[in-house]
Image (cartoon, rainbow, N blue to C red; front, side, top):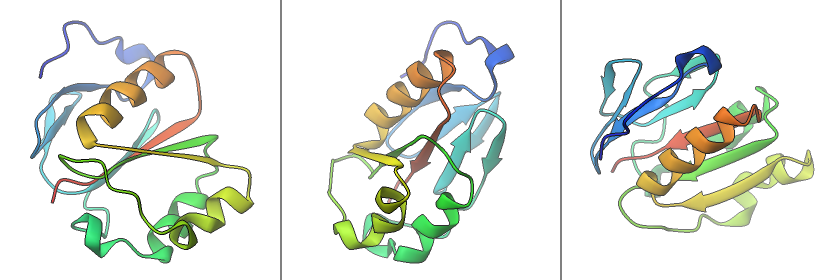
Length: 123
């Protein structure tokens, strides 16, 4: 799916996405990544939902978002709560959805000025 207009003055916005990739600021990403308004972390360590570890969420904790939108690939899958407990213990919300929904949600929240991170998986 392609979005029509992206206001890049608010930071990194997802311009298009498929089940296998996202486009941010004209750059196509095909591997797991973390996106926030001011930074993109390509090649986020987990390559798939099954590869998620507690350490993957601890690395996100260090960025101090208000909310993490976890895109789990083409279908919504819920990780064990113990994996992201470091985030919830710190008062950081975690929303789990399929990756296309996570892309849309990230864009909306970022455009509202929220400090949100999209952690996106494709495999």
